Image (cartoon, rainbow, N blue to C red; front, top):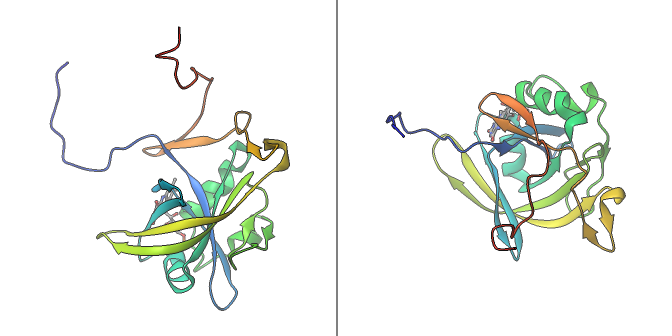
Length: 185
Ligand SMILES: Cc1cc2nc3c(=O)[nH]c(=O)nc-3n(C[C@H](O)[C@H](O)[C@H](O)COP(=O)(O)O)c2cc1C
């Protein structure tokens, strides 16, 4: 196993590619694709997103301290990419992509109806880390398409999510095993 030293850079792959929706105080909606998203606490349920200040969405989230994390499935690959290469400065992404903006129950930011999972988030802390600001937020409401919920339990096994890996999107492939397989006989 011969190793080579390479310039330090973020090489955490694969990562999710989520669609974050937001709304400014003027009532304009926008969507930004975010891969630098992570779970940071389960109780209270919290996640973080890293956003560059030059993004149109940055000021919207900074001023309202609210956003919705929407999980796209494979059917939304085009829309997910579009929201990651076009800026809301120049295009209304909801309109252009004919996506359904559903009113949030606890935040003013809209949910993307076509995404099977939607997390309404309120920002608790913002940390300027250099190229990106980290928005740490609490998930104050979770909405899931009813076909993925049974007796209040969310089962996403049949959801066709995809991942992002250094310039390319990948499907999830087959299930390789269940948690605990290393200790189960
Ligand atoms: C797969 C993918 C992942 C991305 N992840 C991030 C991210 O984590 N943070 C970020 O600031 N920009 C990220 N971007 C870039 C923004 O989505 C892109 O600049 C977008 O056009 C900004 O939209 P806005 O100007 O309307 O906010 C990503 C783009 C793609 C295609």
